[in-house]
Image 1 (cartoon, rainbow, N blue to C red):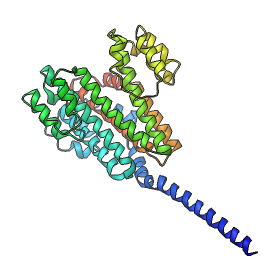
Image 2 (cartoon, one colour; image 1 turned 90 degrees about the vertical axis):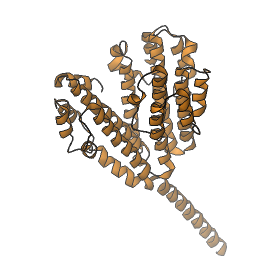
Image 3 (cartoon, rainbow, N blue to C red; image 1 turned 180 degrees about the vertical axis):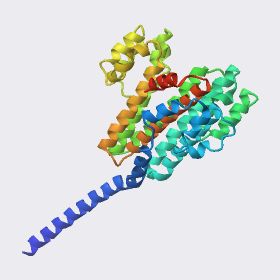
Length: 367
């Protein structure tokens, strides 16, 4: 009897240890998302629907536009504009987006908040590449700066730099120093410089995604690979429109993505945009083309916008499968960026004097 008792006791200990371990795993995985995701869902409920955007399109003046946003989360950013222009409204909306990123960094679990830091760094890449291109072309660089990212101070200093060499000093110690130095030495072109920055950035995103476990890894890999496919497909389509060679296009592509090598090589070697789109009909991206195929033939940005909406939809789907996960904040930040982009467009179109019905049509086409 004593032997049976010992065996039963040992079995119970093993069972309770296993249960405690699995419970600990569940708590570690899901509990940290309970508060932030509940807060994000409340913020998501305040995003504008199409009716509200239509009302904003009817503002007729920028003053009315700002007044119509007084009951929204944008009020604190629009309350003390130095002047009422589309440019100042644009910067105020970007300040709102910057604070949204900072909120994500603050409330999300430490193990995943770092991913949003990397997403914020993408704005550094955009700013640096835009400023450098403007400087090389003799344009006003500050006009291309977004008030977002982790290097705003350096980017603004770059825009005010008197010489191209001065920019190298500003970038000293950053990961962007070496590519810029190679650009100055004429070892790479402006286009290759920009591609290299994006390759570095997406390599970091993929490395981070691969380092996660279970559904966090699944969600992040899906998100990053979709973003890479979007960039690569837009690059291919634009290159086809300019009749560039397969070798030239290949060097501009970002490593990674969901598309296999065979499909990419096929796309690189087709004759034109129409044939490239036909090849995509047999992929998961066929749904993207249903509504915009004709538009893409004359405006490739229509494909880019449609792909961005597809990424939003995929992240929204993943929030249903994994409600307590990083899918929820990713889905929200994508929707927030989309909303702000459309608000900026409305403000600019109002300033340009377009009629409300025309603005509604333009904004509607951005769906």
